[in-house]
Amino acid sequence: MPPLIELRDLCKVFRTGGEELRVLDGVSLSVEAGEIFGIIGRSGAGKSTLVRCINALERPTAGTVHVGGQEVSALRGRALREARHGIGMIFQHFNLLASRTVAANVALPLELAGKSRAEVAAAVRPLLELVGLSGKRDRYPAELSGGEKQRVGIARALATRPAVLLCDEATSALDPETTRSILGLLRDVNRRLGITIVLITHELAVIQEICARVAVLDHGAVVEQGSVFDVFTAPASEVTRALLREELEPSLPAELAARLRAGGAPGTPVVRVTFTGPAAETPVLAEAVRRHGVLFNIAQAHIDHLQERAHGFAVLEVLGEERAVADALAFVRASGFRVEVLGHVRSDARVVA
Amino acid sequence: MSGAMLGLLLEAFGETLAMVAASSAVATVLGLPLGVVLVVTGPGHVLPHPALHRSLGALVNAGRSTPFIILLVAVIPFTRLVVGTSIGTAAAIVPLTVAAIPFVARLAEAALREVDPGLIEAAQAMGATPRQVVLKVLVPEALPGLVAAATITVVNLISYSAMAGAVGGGGLGDVGIRYGYQRFQPAVMAAVVIILVALVQGVQSAGDRLAHRLDRRLARARRA
Image (cartoon, each protein chain N blue to C red):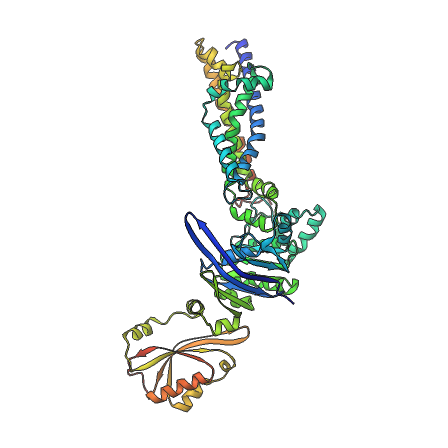
């Protein structure tokens, strides 16, 4: 089956005054029907422009956008408006009409599509049930919390029964708990209605929570893409590594960072071991200690479960004979873990063994 | 104050109301769409059209910058064409309307521009036509602002209508000038001023109340 959404060599150049700003620079992506696809990048990476090309709110300067086999980027007028009925969108700031009640906001896309009053009423009720807002149908947006507003946004986006739901930083204005509940709703919508979701965010946690595949966008180009597990456990690009470092791993403890800056080679190496893959479930470090007679002093560690697989890192001081240390690290590497030497610190009284 | 004078004031009050009501109504009917066109033809809006946008803008500015007393006589040929005469209350309605149209257009434009562009984008993402964007999103969302604009227009027309005496339009201002000023009857002048102040106060507070009632942007206590 061909992908539901296919972007080919997408370029977008904005001209302001005499200056040219290349926001998208040859982006190619495909999104399969029924999946939740994430696009992550820093602000200014071109995410918003990219997602707006999918429903032609932005026209690409070059390249094509296909949704469901239709070249959306070539559509105009009526054909484009009809195609847009098949692509729902939710926004960071919800974009609800303040003058309309919850029910009337959800009804808006149906009114725009020319549905009769009876059809609209019949469609709105189950949508409000789906997002858990039946009790607030006659309230105005100003009377709702952020999470409730986004639920209205989701119900509204689903009203025309689209095949695709675009989420433009949909949880960035929400607190972590509300974010989880909105992501839960999106996952539910994806599973129950089979709707394909394309989500852009700058938050790693959002991608990890619900996406199966991810593309990392930087300076208007896709620097890597693949399954969330592969991309985040074995990042191939510096941008992804930086995102991971900043968001997944807390920064090094100040005390250790200071000692690393002071240096001390040859001294005790400080390494960062990243646990991934099946070996993450086995006691590799304990085995290294047993075989090579080294000691690990754990400075910092974090283990997470990404889609039911263990993933994490530990920052370790490795104490022992120089030769034994090298052998132990080689053993850890051979077991499938990534080992980065962060630096050396002066050996001190910590060696007790 | 004599009974005759009271009758005169009452008649003038009626003329003022007639002039203000008719010119407000016509100016709103013509000025509001003009304001909508000014907004939607602007850069990056739903129907961008730089040439139309600029020329309408220039026309509106020309109308706004012409002093009313000059406009009053300048449009006399047009007035004669519309109402058949250039003298009287009906004849005064024409220049009042002509003066108010660009005024309404600019105020409406300002109110419509206040609508969050995100809402327009959302409507477009839902497949709205430009017409639907205007009727279903722009105007309903700007309604409190549009009501405020209409209120300002009515208040301004009350003030302008005082000059209608120059073309025999009658009205309170005319009575104030002819009796209060030219015939040295300060009681008449005071009565005219008090009536006008009360009228403006009434219009302003009614407009404010309506605008507030239409405004759903702020959460407020709900009736149980």
